[in-house]
Length: 154
Image (cartoon, rainbow, N blue to C red; front, side, top):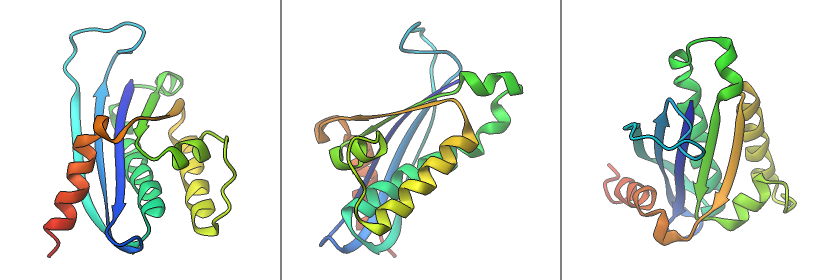
């Protein structure tokens, strides 16, 4: 089972009102090594997360996606499938990608705590998780979900 995930987090004012955007494509087969015409199940959402910074919002977006993926576990047919789970994240925050990949130290205590939560969820879900930086122009849907959540705050 493969999950292709685009996440974004943003805060207006930094810190300021913040939101996350998540787009998850769920495939039963591996689309990178053996592409098929399989149509993915798509889950997407944007939500406000209160007042915070851009970096915290980026981490919260990853956490929101991982929680959603964890909720998909009933779709995994048996325990052997756990090792076949592949989650590929695409983010437009190079800092967060480098931190999650272990290339940059996490100096901020809040971000360190959020990163620990990410790593715990990764272990609970199992499988392989990768994080890749993409330019903002390639993350438009997740960005749009962030802005929609911020614009339609009630």
